[in-house]
Length: 97
Image (cartoon, rainbow, N blue to C red; front, side, top):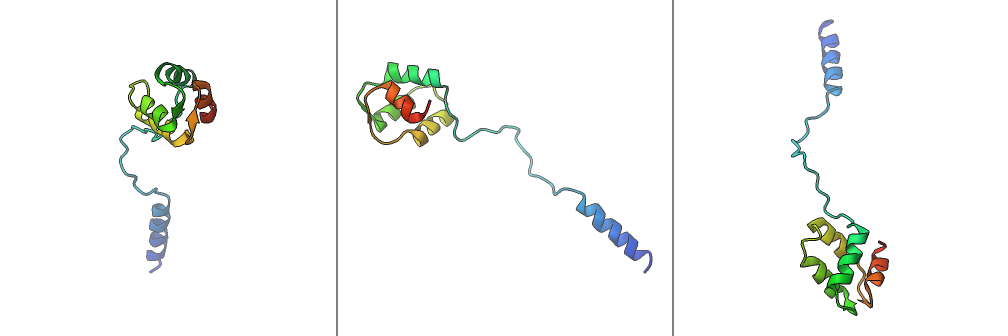
């Protein structure tokens, strides 16, 4: 019994110091939403959106282009308030770019 108690404590302490196994990581961490580059976004809004434009029209123009990644398109959708915009600068202000 004298030997059992120290061995038991040794096992418990040893297990407590080992972290739990983690799920394997693919090594790729992609954000679900990413703020696009301000200058590129404003240029796109000036070149590809006819104003006045609704939120839907702005997002459609952004969705139909390879200039933005899926994460950037999601960010635009998540951050653009519902209203009608009179210029690209107004859209940029609403997006806080």
